[in-house]
Length: 425
Ligand SMILES: [Zn+2]
Image (cartoon, rainbow, N blue to C red):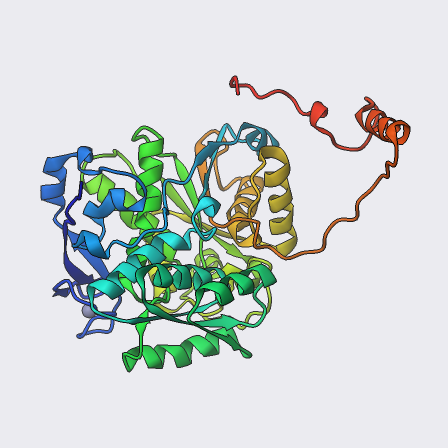
């Protein structure tokens, strides 16, 4: 059962010039970024039943890959949208949903864009893919390229975590560790894209790659019985996930399949907060010299044209932007794990930390339904292993340990102290 694509072409987001559906990274006339266009009238006549099958390619009608044989998959998408009542209580909000994208095949939301990027590479006859990465994008693009039988050239930042390095080394055709400033590397790499040395699997310009992330919002829409949340908090490095999510909700509004798009919140790390800062100050986007942040995937000091697009969507759409310090991000990581059992990496929980801040400053109404996108698994995180406390060597000592831990006045946190869940599960 295959579904056709309703993609019609590319359009410049600046001067609105239209182009046919071909591999093109920017507008010929003004160098503006391009976005994909669809025959929404034809799609609207078909109704939401047009989406069939499972996983990311269920949404093939709103993706730009025409032929089913190009639609590479590792089983991405269809990630859980989890009700989080305990964490909602901690945060003081009425209803909190976590869209957990750490369950994707390589543990990140990037699998959605890797699927459409590598599919587009096949569609346009490329044999080599490449990306510059802090870790997640590298292993994701490498895995999808391997799956499609393409060669991958992965450039990685030397501070990537050991689990991410291992994953990239295992899946990439070539892995190059770059010692230098991340933003400088991207500049050099962009020149190789111009020379058509490989297919651009970076986040800065490729509209075909970005499009895969639209499926995140289409899933949220279906998982909420077509009544999306009031607020969606999305992570922002250069803005790919944010822009794709805004585009999806815009399409759904134009199709008449939702009444109103959610309020969008852009979440950044304070140590890489160029977009949140410009939004707050009402100034144009200015690149920042940045150092290390635990939210490795958000470490973009110069978000470029895509950052400007993100800022424009925030301003036009009445959205919000915020940032959180590394300590707050690590606190959010622990809180999510302890209250709901969701183990996500720092890049993934920056959204939650930013929500905490926006609630504290009363910029977000706690009476609304809030959905937080948590974009990566915690299983690739590197960190200090906590020291193990308590020893037991025989039945008596084990029994003493257990009873002392379970005693009502014990300070040690344990399962029996948690209140029962309110909704029968
Ligand atoms: Zn243009």
